[in-house]
Image 1: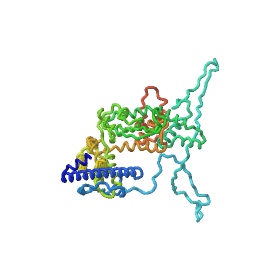
Image 2 (image 1 turned 180 degrees about the horizontal axis):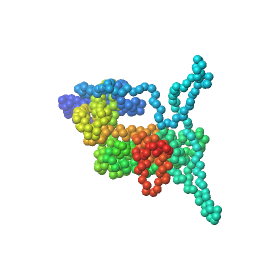
Image 3 (image 1 turned 45 degrees about the horizontal axis):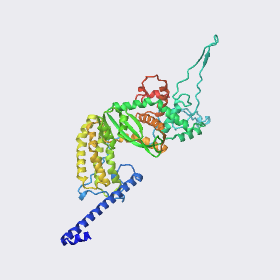
Image 4 (image 1 turned 90 degrees about the horizontal axis):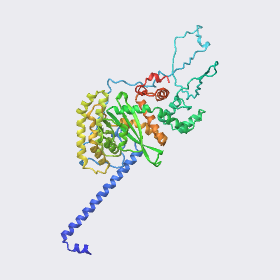
Length: 518
């Protein structure tokens, strides 16, 4: 009644103004609702793309033009979509030969001589044929894994005169004392699990087919104890990263079933950090139940310099407390726009962003193809990349307030603006990279392995995994065959005396000819 009385006191002009205000307010709420619904629909379609769509960001101009949703078109269509032309040079290039690749020269060869029968060595004219040469072809023959038993026969001696002295030859030092596993067996199990991604239950089955019954628990125990043996290698790789001034970091989830104080369904993290001089590149994995900035502190300890990483805020907290400068990742900046490009049928802001970022990568490709020095790389980036970056920054600022901040395109633009100081930091030193692709590629073997074994059973198991993965991937970076490496190292380390350095056993220091003998 009070409200009606108030309305009765108002003039017709005031009533009309009130109605207009209510209508405007209602229309505003409807628009906010529609914007919110559109943002949710776009997020849903992005989720579908990430789950079911193609992951590659190559050939984005030819991406599938679906009807899932239309990305925000450039306001007033004022921005022309710029494409980066790919030039194809056909002159003065070497054409690759077709056909199968030759078999490696260092593989052992067994000759099988094929001769004519005696009656075929006589010509139709009656004269005996004379050998004038040979024709040789090669085939690859594979012999399944050979299982054998090594019998350690220790000779014993006694004095027949006094019959008091008995001497026995010393037993060899083994990587796992009193175990039936030789260095070769341990190397096989480690490489099969962490390089070829064969879970231990599958290896158990393979051993059974060979006629050897080795329980999965025994295999697991071998892995953990072998990791303890090669721990000095892992520690030296970590120190090598800390001693250099450029590093790369990334992390991914891992599930550990039997983790004290945590549910079996909870997720922990496996971190990977890369560093060291280019000719002594080291890779280490590090397990931790959390994702706090203190984890990277524990890994890098006294590291000072540049750290390539993604936009995770834990890295910002870490860098603020240490003498570390973060280098942003343009792969992450591009990915948000690329996802939109894959899903839109009309060229708009995301296509423009992808084209601008493609320019930056075109310059990096030019640097690598021409094998520029560190100083040449720095100068070329200042002359070419910096103006392109300035153009892109202006484009971001111009469009930031023209799109909904909750839309995918709005979030993509905001990410680049927030990360901008880190995204342009690679200009400061010719040794730096435009993105963190190195660590993303390095963590991929762990992700592939995780798809096979799904989870780790215990903390001891996942910590053993971090050591073995580190050594295997460092071997891969230096083109070292991991089985031969582990066989040699697991033979050598038990023989080393206290205080001996493992420096000569690091993958980038190892004598490759020496490990081939093992």
